[in-house]
Image 1: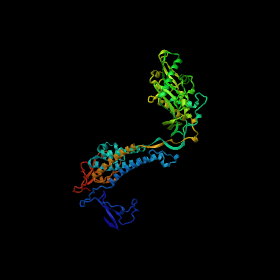
Image 2 (image 1 turned 135 degrees about the horizontal axis):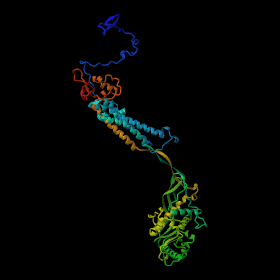
Image 3 (image 1 turned 45 degrees about the vertical axis):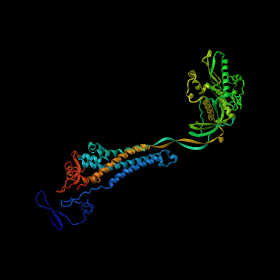
Image 4 (image 1 turned 180 degrees about the vertical axis):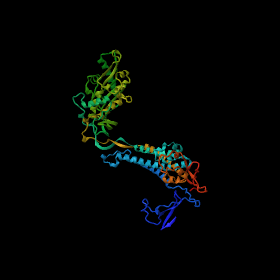
Length: 625
């Protein structure tokens, strides 16, 4: 090298000769950017790098310490996921059993069903992201445990590094065989999104009803105007309307529904004072009178049948015998009474009793009863089914005897159906034959009581559904007929008082709506599984963090720091682009993370990946650089 005119010349050897030629290289400072178009940054701005220390330099040892950022972030992600899951639960709990609101209902757009579902999906997505993030953070620690203690092929290491972000990494069989725990953790992280599919569906929309109550006037039967119940000159002087209601009630043995409801799906409780019969066993003179009429009726039946050889077995007998306040009957001649009031073609006026005495005298089998009218307090529930109002939950209480004209008319209509007789012939030419007179007894449930003692009657008149009277006695059935008759008066609005005079009741109306139905069990089942797997992953990550002694990562800087050795440089010559797919000769090389090489004659190496057999195990706290 020589100096000429302040320029430095360097001698360069050439292949063609041994002579030296000199090329002028200016060294004085000047504007270099003009002569070097790709240089734009001053050399002084580039960071200075420490050169590899010589054998005389002291060894710069690694520091074995765990950065708090890694365990804190791992635990924070896990706890945050649990808190978001709890927030999801509380959010759904807030809407449980509440009505689904729409814009037409005046609800805010952001509180409609569509947005509620979106909020739930967002909760599930955030919770899943946090719990999966905790597992992935733990995965980055656990995978280095596997890389330190086992030699793995480059293809396996590739799969380990990619498993949390590339699902195709699981196509590598060596990942599942050589890195079981990391593979399982990565698989769990991939499957956690399933929780985001299940949890939003735990808030359902189901049909329900909304009950509103208000004080309204309700149908009230008119039990004071006797003209509504009488029809002088027609039959038994009972109005045809009351007669039809009584027939329908007694033959069906049920209360007739009210065909006009206040509003659809309304219900209310109503109490009122009405009438009903109270029956008791006949004793004393009343029992004697029933027996006398019973015997005389049998004689007159045989006389009418013109059969003196047969006998009668009267199964049922009912009549009305007028009795004054002194319990004295108005008829003294029993033959005349039976002929006029019991036998067919008798007088219908016999069925009416305007005195305080019993309205019905009856005998069924060997049981004799009398039934008198009482003032009765009714309490009942009206339940609307569509436009029909049915009566349920009836309770009653007898008060005192009554001779009210309306009660007399109702008793008259009931007696007109029951009064008469029914029986069977025994012996003689009519043996086994049935006979009946006046009564519609066979159309009522009282027939079931007779069928119990007369099996042949059951074959003649088959059992019907409404005949289930096994649990009721003879007096109970008469009383129930009377109460059903009174309650069935609600079925005709012609018997109601004017609306202005009607009773007031607390009316509840059920309106069909849709409500949210939250299923917390299903939500916590999905979240519980996700939280349990995430907890297991975090526990493995913290354990790996402690065993590793440092916080690892799968970042570029981690790869750069752990792959600095001559062997790796040699096998990747010509392939420094890192293009995929990895050549087979590289993919099959087995590497392990540990202590590689040494510096000079010292037995101190550096941590990094090395070929199996040339890398030494790396222990926590070991001196390396």
